[in-house]
Length: 195
Image (tube, rainbow, N blue to C red; front, side):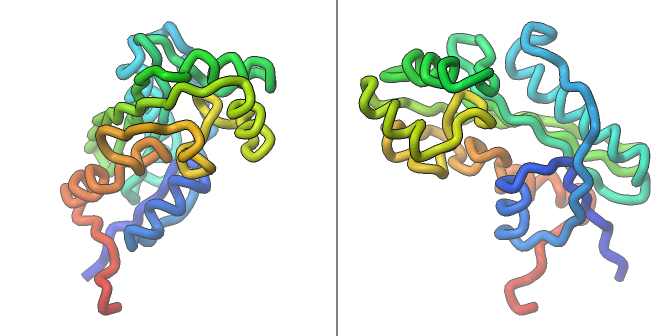
């Protein structure tokens, strides 16, 4: 029986790692799109819309495959906290997040043939109260410039994070359990452990 090809429309190493660890076989074809900027849509809708943009762009070139597009954002009080412009901006973001609860939203879109299905997953993350010493230590260990919200939970996240409510892997960039459920619609399944 032919298995439907799966394409990840993202160059994110974390998303690739999560999908591979879950047992999926896939090709990586990063989407070349201009994402909607903050303010264009409400926070959660923005994640979903950007995921749709990415999936559609790659799906146009590969209509025979199941294309997975995703977009992850950090939000504080409904405001999008994107990737910092520079280290000063990164430090400011971490100062704002200290001792607060923020949300991490990943929008996901699956395209195959005429079918387009999108959804989003939200995880709540509570940061510890920390000061300038912890921020300095963290930013020396982790390159925060390419990280939404100026942090990566899988890179020394224990220095910052007090509690996670929801899917941990969603904070990394892909809610794998939910993605697996949705991929079942297209009969895309991970390799069995016996293979």
